[in-house]
Length: 236
Image 1 (cartoon, rainbow, N blue to C red):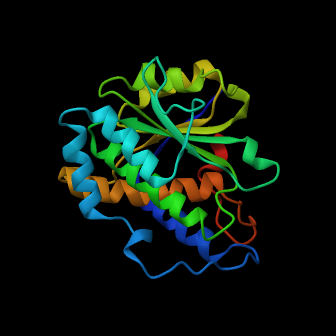
Image 2: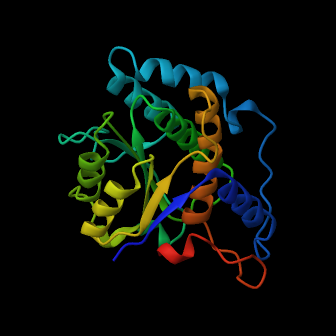
């Protein structure tokens, strides 16, 4: 039975700092001082514009290709049933077989944030042995969260047993909970902590939150004696 968590921004950002600062003796990775390893407001604004224009699916595929994501369906990013998905391979010898699924709707601030977060995770993976688990990034048409999430979880290339957690950038907790329960997958929804933000500002905040989520779900878990209880642990 899955347990649905609704995760606002602030706890996730704090969790990311705790996880980075209390890694239980892990080597500290120094990333290059470059705009390539930080969220880009320009890219977020462009993604929001292009995903609401002509050929949004082609744009999403292009962004995934440029970010270095691996097509999720053999040589294709697109599944016939709708989702567009790519993955960042895990680096751990055994945990890389586990999937952390993060999804959003195309044409929303969450969709733009997810594309930017995926790019940053892929860039960071070239400098460190992270993520440990494989991160699957999925986007589906606007208004199609339920069928898109279901199609992603039932894709023939992996089993639901391999999914360590599934998280959706949306405000529709109830319908996401129904899908996760049906598949027996843990997870929840991710949404902005503050209301009334513009689309670009919301996308920037969500990018930080998605990155924090991936760090916690796809990376090593800090020792419980060092870090406060993990709010994500209850969903595993």
